[in-house]
Image (cartoon, rainbow, N blue to C red):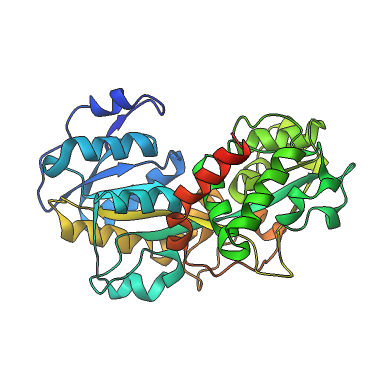
Length: 347
């Protein structure tokens, strides 16, 4: 069913050297995807069954996909691009790699705050699933009330307790980009400096590594995307269950602006040869069926608010208040955020 070309996640050259995808026709869709979740394959299979449109897929990391699109230019066979995080989607839009889409279905189902700016011609990208940037803390060492806001991560009371992945990772660029909207540039820089002062160790690893570091006692508190938490909660591995027994999760800023939520999203490639099928595919990913699958398959929240997905791990975390800043604004702040990180030494 799938012609799948898998590239190493960190080697852009290998991505660029991947074999060309099949020639275009109206029954073939060329997909460049940075979603590395095996559970997504059922989504693509169901789309083909429903429409008769086959999917040729190129898998790579976000940077590799963007490099490939730039290298290919107008000759690119890509129809649809799937990326993770608004910072990456916004960057691709600025680089002219997408084209605007006017779709009443997408506009009706996906909140305006979770898609690219509509400048009269349609949005250039659409959020398809969401994940919350939560705080994870060691239940034996940390009081919930000391870590229930993002601001408290920079408070001296948490000195030597904070673990985090690189500040320059898009997940953190977006979080800090949202803080800039809430706090302003000066207070955001002071916050970033405070987080650096509170670190238990140098930033390293991914979100799962931060959760495990909290459980081991290496640090007391960390930031993680919610789906990493849910993945450990649903794991059958004894060591993962042991980790989750030692930590607790809080949705930050419930008494103020709400928890930062980011997206995985999709767009129609600028030089798509099969635009009609590309739009149809994005609309399919906004369907009830696909939205439920995002939630159950990869522990993400549906972007369509009317969809209720019975994911036991996500349900156990409870309902929460989300911030309402347009995700496109958060993405646009990333350059200023990086400058702040450089000044304060948040590596």
